[in-house]
Length: 291
Image (cartoon, rainbow, N blue to C red):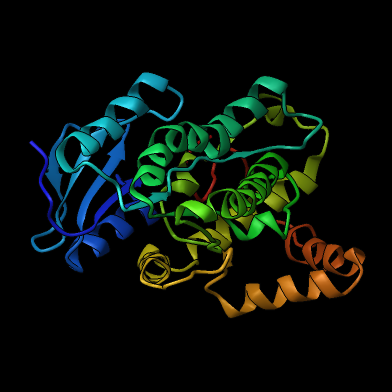
């Protein structure tokens, strides 16, 4: 039975972090919201007034993606807004990242989104309308040392977002990428180190970068800050290709676009590779949790 009630929103990665905050905020604003999680059970979750339905979906599993999208389409006949917020992270030197580890990173951050789009976009195209908001990262334009694969996947996502804007404009489907900066979530604890990082040849450089990543994230903004930016983008008539909610990162993007890359590179090195971690901090005592 198809129910025609309000705008229908699907948010991937809605069990925690930015995805969870976004799903709850959409629900609070009166949207009909479905979220996805590897451990979803077709259950209602979230506080009163902000509850949404959490569906099972594993981005690496084609059948799982199809099932979750079809569940929403069977009930409503459409998906008005898709927010791709699911994510994961690996850390390690590019040299010390195997092709399999890189593939796993891209499978969530890029190819997993492609799988979702493969099932959502035909319905949006048939309806003649729809909005896709991809959750990117400032790393897409400000690549970080020892997060090369994460940065590359987010940059690839932005390129695809821009291509989709042109391809699907005749069908009334809009696209936008919202790019958060450091955010205090359990993403930090879930970050995986590449296998060779345990005995890295990069020594203190790797430890400096990893410590600064974790320190900055744990001191970062609440996920609700970026959820507000995502919902605001959804309520724009014509959202831009890229939204960076934080002034400091917007300024860095402008600087990196105008000045030679070596200027931005120098700034990144100063932020991530210039200070040793505090005494006693090592791979066994990470801020985000055990390796």
